[in-house]
Length: 126
Ligand code: HEC
Image (tube, rainbow, N blue to C red; front, side, top):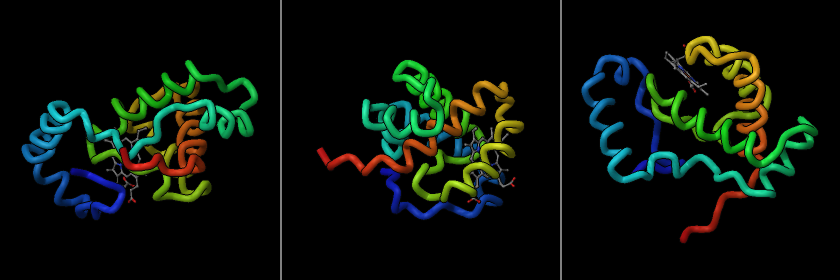
């Protein structure tokens, strides 16, 4: 189970063990739990998003979350939006947009999504 508390393995190990990464990806697909750390899109999250982008809406944030989950875990595991502050996210999203070949529209929407996600209080354990 990957949680926010799971320590990130050093990146050089991730790159060296592509097979392990593949195995984890398959396990994630089977358990459908690896995106658990990424907040779901709720009206509350959309409210946070609208403080940065008044045009943000629920369907748009759903698209941004889906892109995040699908495009940001091919080289490393998904980064918890709460693990970085706002300034760090600006820097990383700029850098990673190129790696993930995002359009500028996708990059902007995903930045608004992660910044809103990091402000959303953690969901209660079910
Ligand atoms: C093509 C491979 C690749 C893709 C796709 C990718 N990343 Fe990365 N990511 C890396 C590498 C390599 C690093 C190591 C740092 C560097 O390159 O500067 C990294 C580092 C990071 C870090 C910093 C981790 C730390 O050191 O604390 C964050 C945050 C991050 N990526 C987020 C994302 C997001 C968000 C996306 C999707 C938009 C994404 N990454 C897609 C390769 C990738």
